[in-house]
Image (cartoon, rainbow, N blue to C red; front, top):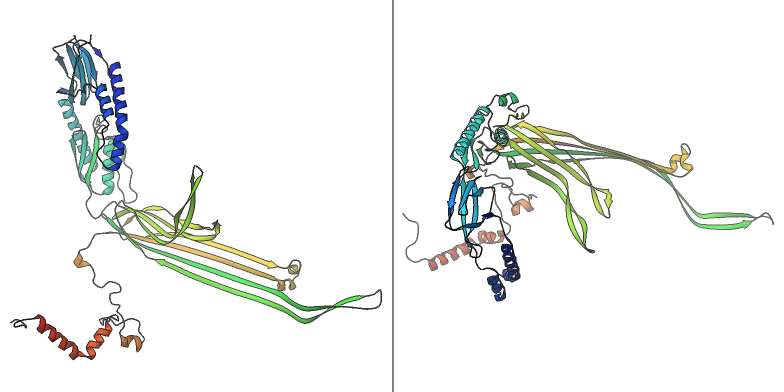
Length: 534
């Protein structure tokens, strides 16, 4: 009788001894690895391994088997036991004590171990079984992939796509009309050619309807596309770099109006006195210096501030680009572990933050996702000395032709406040109460407009780079321009270097001295006939 099992008691005991010996070697190996040296071998651990393991059997042969077929192996000795590493790949059926049938269930490789002879003198034999797919299955798979390729060609006639099966993979190769159509092709393939419609792409977009897909021939891809890895090698022609021109305009208006009156009295040297008949005393006082002040305040103030930024961002189709203009402030953070606290500092930004992600859909059609965010510091909402921020943000996704303009408006903010201060009682008296009251009213308006325009661009050669860059014509003023003409910039084409000007001035004042020094140097370092060639 042949017994099939994956392990037995004595194997488990031997494996436990092996793990104990490896655990004894592990600290030594780790210590040597930390020090960058060869691991030191513990003789006691090696001796323990030798006592625990007598032999390690490796596969010595390989047997090829087609899926769905079987082979009968006839051994010279009786088979007492057999073990399969992966039962999902092959199945064994014993006929006699020396005959063992191997049945291929699914493609793959696994190891089969058999024990020959009696239990007292067993001999272990291991071999590898390689199960290959059926030739018929491969041809059916190729036919299904060919049908799928024909469907892709009929659904997307403007693209040229080829499906190449390689082992358990499908390589999708070719050229798509645009990035959107390439995405639709990959989505169609990953769904396994199911009759599901492709969504439209907006006002300028094209789509595939459910009716068009319903007329296609049904393909059974349960064992093809759904079980195979799809590799995307589709190429999209054209330029894929997008430049975004942005104009950010912000207008701030504020108005403050104040009107009030205050009555101040300054008293000094107040002298008391007493007089009158007995029993009818009168207490009086006199001011040696009287100082009463009446202050009137009337103020009307208007402020206008304009912020205009024109950043230009360039990125690849499908990638994000970010523009940041502003500053950062520190935000301390206290973290604690097991009662031990440590302070760390992080920085939070404020100002203008613009993030956009373009996707080129067609030759001149771009899908644009824009996320502008504007924040300012607000000291009124500070906590423990950490400022708060007032943030305004928007997020939108649109499709534009190259050169078209998108305007994001509506980012407005209006704030109005007023206050009054007056004397109790006195301030409620008509007309006279205004002499001891102060009123104020203020209003703030902020309006923000973002204008974006995408363009498809490409790199330029070095010869096309403009030579006249900003600031090239700005030169340093000469002595005459600076002291006599009161100029802080020089004239274009007239270059002056104040750092070496004293040397040039000496050469101009004493030309003979420098010319004689040049001749002496030339005679010293030159020999023979010198001069210009013919």
